[in-house]
Image 1 (cartoon, rainbow, N blue to C red):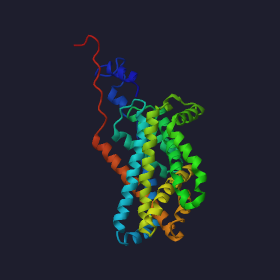
Image 2: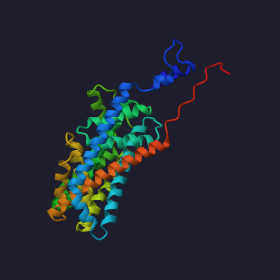
Image 3: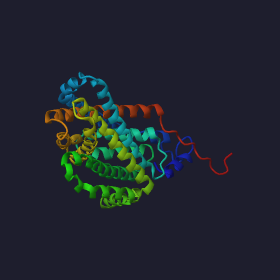
Image 4: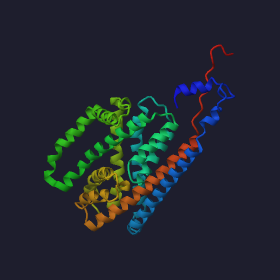
Length: 345
């Protein structure tokens, strides 16, 4: 809501506007249609999430039960859940840097709520739902739609670029001595960190094509570098969930560590590109099988991929629930005190 609107309501007096229009409390209340749309969107999101959890349980229930029955299995599976949840938190911090870089003082609890609702919106086919959720929820805490769109676009570019760079970790295991041919890509990733302005220019150009104000994409180099750093940390930590699973299934720990971190990042990027599929189902698993097949039998790699899907879904739902509880505990945004008019006592 703009400052001009707030000022008009503040000077209207406690009984409403001077022209007899409705009081500010009534104007602030959402309309019946808006409430119905919000309820319908929530129900669709809950149904899509339940379908994702149910599908993952049906597909990976046997593998998870067998893995849990192995020595240390329960502890490793809990570690896998915590690792992916921690990676999601780091990813949220990477995105939040871009949101508040424009001067927003939004609380971390509120931005976490927006981010994680966007995370589970990927269970609904099409990336547009995540963008719409970010826009609507951002407006509710005073962040302009243009800023939310720019942060979404910047976060997407940074996430996919750093994910592709992390994916290079699988090269030695898959290509052996021929992995050196990927060295130029490593240099390119380093150059992107040194000169991050290209990310903002790319998103600004896209926003101009969409006829949206491109100024919101002008993030500072410091914010872009910080976002890139959080994103890299997110890939490193979230990939540990897959490592815990493959070690539990018998893969060599040292050899499989870079394969799991790089393979999970690369597979997640591939799943993001397959945006017509809910959460990239199928595409992610196919990409992940190739590097895992280099460090363990194909049957074990298949079981690890299926178990990884379940761990990711459960940790995403749990992290979203925690974020919603945190935002609820933080309470509503404080209402600014009305400004005193000149000459008022």
